[in-house]
Image (cartoon, rainbow, N blue to C red):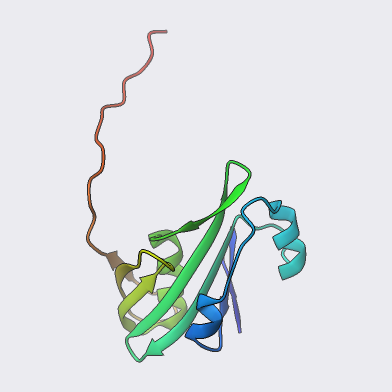
Length: 133
């Protein structure tokens, strides 16, 4: 089964071993992934495997500055997946080395209300200011 988002690509995998085995060449041009996956466009690759009735493991790769990186926690991918699995209430564990726990809840497939949450750790703070014009 394939679940496609607006700017990405999601695929269900057969098991956790397949998910853990994914390796991405960080220097591969995004067009290479688009062609391999048959995408007309694609800025992100999101893979998941159900690990229980209320749980899934996920991994997301996105292009940043011309290189592919693994995003360890992304609500923008977890939300559409929760809607796809609706009704669903549980946890998505995302990432290969540092695993983020993303709590998700979705109501029904049609007109699904999706809630996403999890713990965060502040690593920096600042203030945006307009440049004098």
